[in-house]
Length: 367
Image (cartoon, rainbow, N blue to C red; front, side):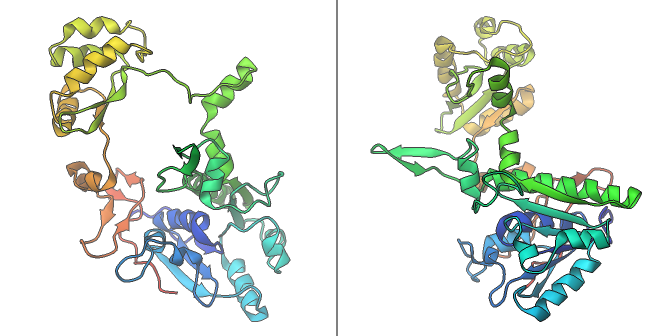
């Protein structure tokens, strides 16, 4: 990588499991030198999250630890604690995700370290934050999601069960905010000499994403939810001829008109009022017409048409299908040959160099 904006920045990752690993992984992708402290004798429990590859490795560790170095230290051991403190005194950034007060109780006092070096940036990325009634509530990603209107629930015989989940969106959003906050605090440290102690709650990040409901509830002074929305004919899914759901997103009049003309149904244009955005709320007649039209072509054909017609839409794909697309290959999201653990790079692409942040990192370290 020729462009590494955090080159020279030293990051000490004292965390366990996903939040700290994701945060420090994003910083490593930007060029930081990350040292990961892991608990002996087996290392971070991140390494023990199933499923496992045929080599016994966890994809959580193999997906989040690229570009890092590992050292096994037990803070309960006096000698190891001194090494942790020595590393902390060299670091520009400390990332951790234990419950509030844990590290101070073990003799690693972040407030004292910041008094020694005001430029130090400490990022505490936890489930529910450093303050508030839930600050001591342990967090595995999905209980954060459950408490933030984001956990899918399916019902079987009158009983709830967790719906399909591939990640905790609290973890994903929280660590994205943590990485952004660290970069902002580093800028402050470089320009003013003052770093920060960052308090990122993954729950906060997830709740903030529900800003529409929050804003409407506050403004209207009554509960507002998007759960009970009507069916929206212009922004919904329809089955293709090969049985794949295909999303149509023709909210603007220009897109809807173009779509209707291309499928040979100019008679449907009048279902859009011409407003800036039209969703087709509760237009059952239009839904029925579109069900008939979408059943005339395969999902692949619909995607080709959306691209050619300049109309928002596309089939609902699962990740194995995503990986087969030419666009996935063109964006160079994953590095490595089939049969090896890939380096799944970040969503950041440096357009001026043609590189993707996180490309070319060294493989995840052994414990």
